[in-house]
Every structure is written in structure tokens, then in C-alpha cells.
Length: 55
Image (cartoon, rainbow, N blue to C red; front, side, top):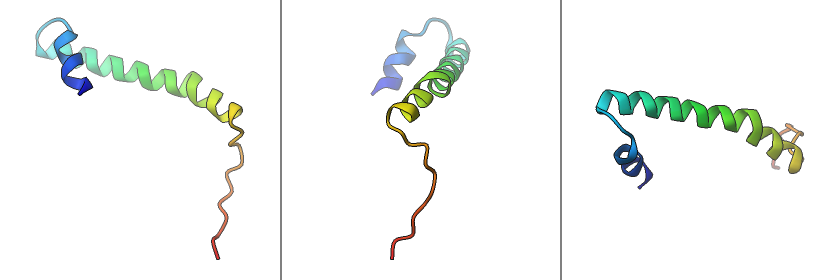
């Protein structure tokens, strides 16, 4: 699992690891919203947000 690996790699006591994990998570979310999702939306042309009813 990735979380135990990240926990072991981060330096410092537990409270420092928690702060670093929160910052890391915030950075990942920011990168996703800033660059990855817009690129994906344009590349795969998913601009249409209509929902069609299934008969």
C-alpha cells in the first residue's frame, strides 16, 4: 500500500508527518485541478454536460 510507504519516507515526528501529508495532498489536488483535469477535458472533448434519459 502507498500510505505506509509514504509515512516511512517522510522525516520527523508524527505531527510533522501529518503536516507534510496534508501539504502533499493539497499539492496533488491543486495540480489535478489546475493542469490535469482541464487537459483531460479538452483532449477527450467532454464539454457536453447533458444527461440523457434512458427509456
